[in-house]
Length: 388
Image 1: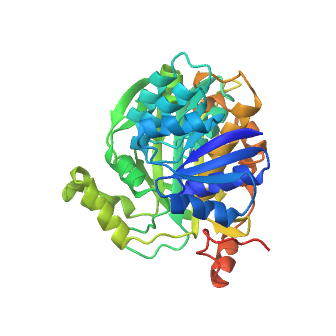
Image 2: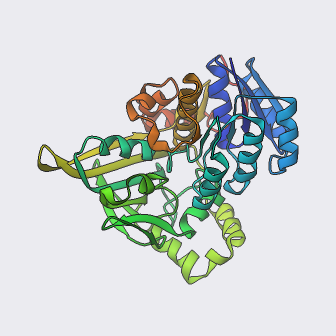
C-alpha cells in the first residue's frame, strides 16, 4: 500500500484524499494549515486509511520535519501555486515523488530545476489545464505525420449563468486571477512567443451552444516546449459564455485591478457566488497531414458533477482530482519508469481514461444529477458524512 501526503484540504484536496483512500490502495495523510479543516475531510469520508494533520506547508522547514516523522512515497500539493516551490524542495530532500496542480509558468520552471537528477518523479501541472488537456492534445498530435495547428480549449462554467460575468467561482480565485493576468505562451509560425491575456477572442460552438475563448496563462503547460518548431500554430484559450471577456477586461485592464489583485480577489469573492452545479468542457483540435491529406481530429468532452461517496462534487473538482490521481497512480504502479521532471505529454490518453480514477472523465452523468441532489437539499454537504 502506497503512502501519500495530500497538502491542502480545500475543494480539490478533499476529493483527492477521498478518491485515494476509497481505492483501498493508498494510506493517505491530508494536511492543512487548519487542523480542523483537515479533520473535517477525514470525518466526512469516514474510512480507514485516512489521517489528518495540522501543518503549515508554506513553512518548508516544518514540512521537511513532518516528512521526516511521517515518510511517504508521494506528495500531492493542492496548495496555491506560490507554495509549490518550497513543497518541491522538501519532496526532493525527502526522496519522494511530487505532484501539483499549478498553472503558474514560473513555478513550473523552478520545479523543473529542482527535479534535475532526481531518482523520483516531479510532475507539475497535473490539473485540468494544464494537465488533462495537454494529454488529450498530445494524443491527437501523435496521429499526424506533420502538424499544422493545435488548439487547446477548456471551460469550467456554471450550468445556469445569471449574472453580468456569466460566471460562478468554481475553483481557486487566486489561480483564476493568475490565469487572467499573466503573460501567455503560444506557438506562431513555429516559434514560441508571448501573448497577452484576455486577447485573441474567438467564438466556438459545441452541441448548439455558443462560447467565447480567449488567451489565459499557463494552460499550454510544457506542450509548446516539447513540440516547438514541429507545429506552425499552437495556443491555449479559456472558454466562457459570450460577454465574460469584455467584463474582465474592464476590471483588470481599464480599472487597473491586475496590479491590485488582492482587491480584485475580494471583489470577486464578495460578488460572484460559488456553485457545485457546473460543467467542464474539454476541447482539443489538431490539424495536420495524414496519408498525405490535410485533416483535422478533435477530442471534445463535457463533464458534469458526480455523486461520489454519497456526496455531490462539482465537475471542476471531479476532473481536477481525477487527473492528478490517475497520473500519480500510473507513476507509482510503474517503479523506475518516471524520474526527474515529467511533463504531462509523457502520459497516454487511453491509459488515463482507462485508469480507475481517470474513468471519472467518462462517468456519463448529465446535469440532471446535480439538479436532483440540489432539489433534495443535499448539495452543500461535502464536509458531512453521507454514507447509507
